[in-house]
Image (cartoon, rainbow, N blue to C red; front, side, top):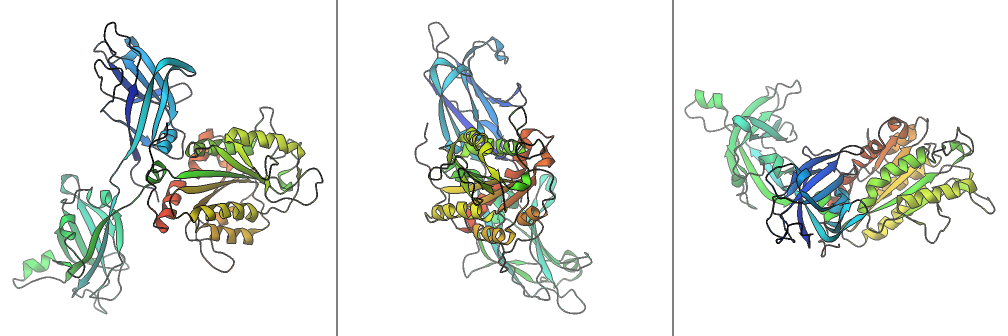
Length: 535
């Protein structure tokens, strides 16, 4: 599920040892934040206040920026010595700046860099420290309710009650924030415990007026109101174990008609508590590493790499769909992996020197004891190097590489801390031989800190891949066990052939933050507490 509001991050900035441009006094610095909005264009997002006479400023004005995990957000911070009252910076001295991605800032939480006059040209002195903080209320409200002696609304049988919660919005309008399930044929219902983010439930205001409607469900949509009451979270919080808070359910028409009318039943709040709900950034900024692994399909159905028809054929510019997909996704993920060493594997090819049986999980750099490539560039270089030496073969087995990464994730999971999460990117032409073993491997992996992204390359119909994605129904193993959580994201590359390179990554990575949070939540693991920031 997408969150209804964009994640916002606040950056605080400080500098040390700035250049002094003013004669006889120190500079009067200010910092500007820009975000890349096109090939050579930058848009200003905000600026700090100007401080007087200091070469080591700590700015109090925070710089706000919307955060999107699935895109590379290039930022530029520039520090200026302001000597006049105009807002145009063209006439002010530039003391230096730094280009950095938002992913780099949040994954190290606090980042210190030397100032540069332009990319690759150091300012000679001065450093900037940027610290990120997510702006949000991470609390959620957890409620358990029941009702007693509700009015009977149905001619035959009892009522089918459900509750609706509204918060007061602008101009006094009531906005629906939660609806419970319907309890059939019961005048003393107990509803299931539920959790709603506090921001959604009461705009984080514990005294905001709330209205609760108890209604009788009708399948034709004409639900009848049983009764309502108003309250606020601070009142609901009085519910302690064993002593619920009780509200009269009042139907306004009945109240008008009858002097002796007391209520149409009572609603009891059995328990109400506030608890922390962690976000993706809580985990990343707390020090959780995202480990990225790549698997590339070298099976015969791709076609002979020397033929221009082959999906592995290198165009004159040294690219093909496999490499384009790898670049797009890899560039985003690499910011979240500190060592930038990515294990890369191939499957479905026969290897030199003997070209005997096909291998279903071989190190792309031909170094089985150390399959790590340095950065995304390293994977690309390994791919270009081995491609001419491989014999494309078959069958197409996915389960060995999934099981391989799953076993590493399983070892990491034993640490019982939210310190590691794994993303496996499989690039394939979509023909799959071991569908059942792959289903079983995915169901097992859904209990581990792992997400699987499958990018389908070429023109195939990818039916099997869509089944693995399971968006339109839960994927089940061969013995009928359902996935513990949704961990597979599939997209066909052709959908993005004419889109900008970043569009593919946005589509496949959009789900990863929620998948990571859902795993650690399932395991009840809080974000690790980060040690002192690394520069």
